[in-house]
Amino acid sequence: MDHATRPLGRTGMEITLVGAGSWAIGGGNWKYGWGPQDDATSMRALRRALDGGVNWIDTAPVYGLGHAETIVGRVVREMAATDRPLLFTKCGLRWSDADPFGEPVKNLRPESVRMECEASLRRLGVERLDLLQFHWPDAVGTAVEDSWGEMSRLVDDGKIRAGGVSNFDVTLLERCERIMHVGSLQPPFSLVLRSEAADVIPWCREHGTGVIVYSPLQAGLMTDSFAPERIELMAERDWRRWNSEEFQEPRLSRNLALRDALRPIAERHASTVAGSGTRLGDFVARHQWGDRWLAVGRPGRRVDPGDRPDPLSRGPGRDRGRDRADRRRERARPCGSARNGWLRRDERPWWLGTVVLRRRPHAARRGGRRPCPCASHA
Image (cartoon, rainbow, N blue to C red; front, side):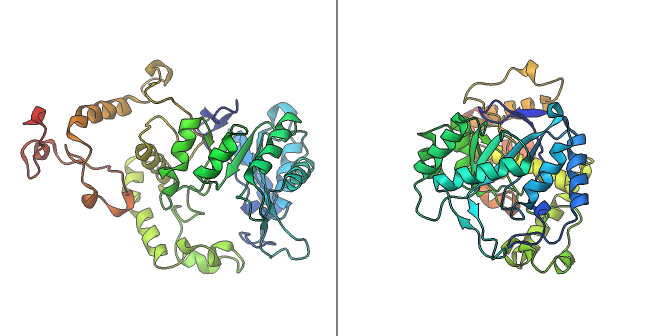
């Protein structure tokens, strides 16, 4: 496994490009579960990830109504303090023990935020959380300024190292930033769902906020072995069966066609479809924002516009191909992005959206059916 790390925004934390999630680990006894899970298998999976070099775990109280945090806590307690991973959790989704399959309430009242933080500390068995995130925007009438003010006080009290948010839009991010810096954002992002690259992720780039995306493989849909027949094998209460349009027709066939279109790319690079999909997701997002050094689908590394990293710091040969591509793009700029060999929007494969991976032969650009109008190429 790649042990490379990236700064999580300006939090001071260096985290591996891939982390360990725990949504499914919560089990099936709540509304948005993935079906029954074996706790021993879950713990082995977490240990395997940590042994492989992953240095952070993302969890939440609502995953299994406290069960996922409990499982993560058992694994962490087995480890020496110096070997423990960074622990990221969330708050803001409250449930009723009397109705475990009821809809969790999006509650960010200050007293609720603090109470959930204290409960997470107990379940995880630690004295401080490395990152506490608002899971969803409030739905009970709480001003985000009041909620984020409480997050700031938890930092001052030493209960948490940094505060972040999940599923927030730019307006909410701006309101939080006025009170305390937003350490991280956790939006959904995959090749299937790329809308977050249009606004909130560029906002994070400009403000030095780390980005950790969830469901980069679209809840398993973009993995190599997924087939429509597997939906019938899912547990009856698996949330993907009843709460995700991506797992239902007509989107299901379209998504699997996208997955299959990645197979030749994966084969060329001796990789898996899943691995190629996450890297292409990075490519799509980086080129949509115009920042080719910002990692997306992974913790974000902020590079100020116009401040190119020192090539000697990149590692031997790692980015030579990228540098050549950059030089080609710079030479192409006088002609505009819609010409000079880049395929026009109406010529692009639907699954690449606003990004182009194919170019016409050079001769076609110079004297073919669409000659370049730029004087330098006349």
